[in-house]
Length: 210
Image 1: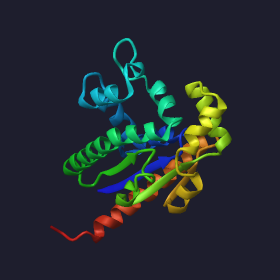
Image 2: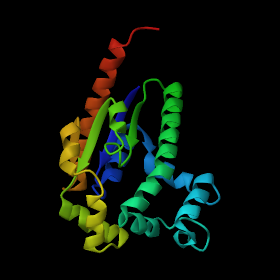
Image 3: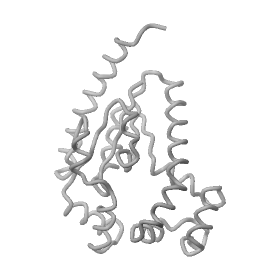
Image 4: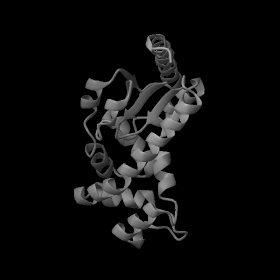
């Protein structure tokens, strides 16, 4: 089993890379999807967020309005810290559970942990390899404006709340610059996955027989 971290700044295009890796044969553990599952209406995490942040973060059907919550926490470090205290331990616990389960079913799996905050939370240290998806800040801002309808100032706040990209690049084993065509991105991602498969084979050879 090879555990690979996949991270990058907000709107760097990490989701595209994750999908390509999945198509190539990787097993994806998606931290954002885990977070969505955890905050389904009437779950313990949902109840806690509702208590802390109030009814205003809920839509008429009771679902968390993620954009509303994001706007609230990214403009206030204390609020962001509260959110992190609620979500991060639960996300980490579920990620670890899923990795263990996958490993038991398929000891030779290449597991990709897709998580925006792998570096911020030092979780990357548990990975065998780390892929960082990178992009220019101007392109990140443009994507946030198109994707989430944010104004430039709010987009910059979100970007600045994360560790600077240059710091992530320093610890990356692989870097994918996702700012060209989809075909260029796909070609680079497939090349890296071939290398990951080679590494997985080498690791298996070095593993002592049970």
